[in-house]
Amino acid sequence: MSQPPRRGREMRLLSTSAILGYGFPEASLRAGLDRGPHVIGVDGGSVDPGPHYLGIGKPFCSPIAISRDLRLMLNAAVRHGIPLLIGTSGGAGGAPHLALVAGMAREIARQDGLHFRMALIQAEQDKDSIRRRVAAGRVKPLARQPVLTDETIDRASRIVGMMGTEPFMAALDAGAQVVLAGRASDPAPWAAAAIHAGLPPAPAWYAGKMLECGATPSIPKGHDSLLVTVREDHVECEPMNPARRCTPLSIANHSLHENSSPVHHIEPGGMLDTSECRFEAVSDRAVRISGMRWIPAAQYTAKLEGVERAGYRSICVCGTRDPLLIGRIDDFIATVRQEVAAKAEAFGAPPDSYRFGIRVYGRDGVMATREPVRDATPHELGFVLEVVSRDSQEMASAVLGMARTNMLHTDFPGRLCREGNMAFPFSPSDIEVGPVYRFSIYHVMELDDLLEPFPIQYESL
Image (tube, rainbow, N blue to C red):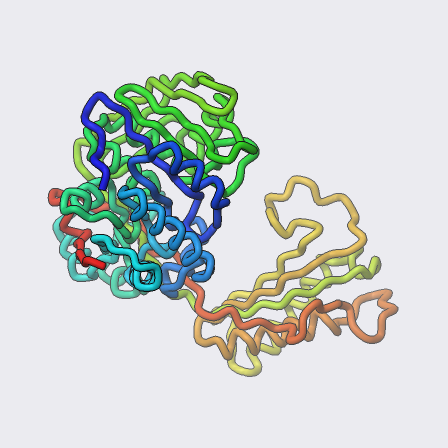
């Protein structure tokens, strides 16, 4: 592998895309490699798609798409003798997600004749270890969550810890060229590479903040490749696709991304303060950012993310363009709800055993009661019927079938249609979605040994 730069020099980090499996142009990857990056990498996922993927143990990107991106990156890393770093592998970063991507890496290495040392960093947490941390008072709630209890831990389907830079640096120290990690802070792989090379944490973490989403800090935004050069007191960002460019405004706008504060970014081990950042165009496509500060935390913490099964979901999509029905839609939906409740209880589904929702698209399907404008009369409305049963998929589908039938046939004053109120775009109309998960653990754990929750296994391919 190429040697990382010594302190005082620059480090060039190449991100291929926003998430492994989102895709990127091969030409952008080639352009980035022509710039001689010291590290290539990509973020593998996040909690953005919700709790389902962590609970079910499957990726939210297609395995076909993940394999395509991974093959290009593995070949590039091996051919150029540089490390490849991937965080939150498989989209959620649990044990099955990491195993999926590791299996792909092994198969690609076998097919393409690649040889490298690979590190796998686990992020899934043992429940007994979490209980011990709770008992020792070393787990605190986040975001108005309740105090974590043994009962909540027991119900959890899967719990992951969100690692910072330290496990990545340990893997690099051990000579790993390919590092696949479970759940990690999105910027952590990039920050780790730069800090490992001797650069300060402030520009290292800021670089990670830019690189975690690929070329999203550029305009036009898109899933594409971004090169960030890290130096002692600043970073420079440039997209590798000539159709895109970074501007001071696009970079400043992206620094607000996925954060409760516009200037304070809490990470494992500290806070990135961007309140004094300066943005300077160094060309028509590249921007220099300086003035960032890193404030170490008094106590190192790592976030815990856990999910539990909440039931089973079935859905149905339908629509109407009957102006008489649209004119009295609230009364109609209220009648449907009453009919469904009575009939579902008759076959063994009391109201407290399921949740029945109707999203009305064309009126307030996105914002529901928060929708500020509801006085326009549309010519058509779309409905998504959803039933989540506490007990079983069979019961969810039974209640949904009753809801679909009543949406189709419930009478209303002035009704002229004698056949059905709704149009259904699909047959079968009812779709069994499967288990439903909810976030039940959103806490932080205090750490003294920063590697202990994130064991590393090595293998040579």
